[in-house]
Length: 123
Image (cartoon, rainbow, N blue to C red; front, side, top):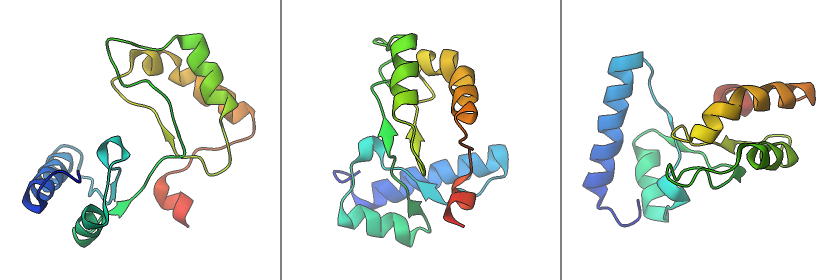
C-alpha cells in the first residue's frame, strides 16, 4: 500500500467494502495491510476511512498456490506457535490450510484455547 496514491488506496478499500456489504451485509471495520506493508500515511488514511489496522502475530509461508507447504509440517508449525492473544494469518487460497484447518481448530481447542472475533478480543 505505501507505493499507491491516496485515491488508489481509498478506491480499492471502498470498492471492497461495498462488495462485502452487498454480498454479506457486513460493514468492514478492520484492515490488514497487504503483505504487512504500511506507512504512517497509509495508516492515517485507513484510519480516516474508519478502519482499525490489525496485524498478525503468527504467519507462515502458505500463500503461494504453486508451492504449498507440507501438511504435517504446517500443523506442527501452527500448533508449536499458538499463544495467548494470537492473531493467526492463514491465507484462504492455501490448499494446505483448507486440508488441515479442522484438525488445527480441534487441537487448539483441546489445548484449552478459544477462538474469538476481533470485536470480542478488544473488549
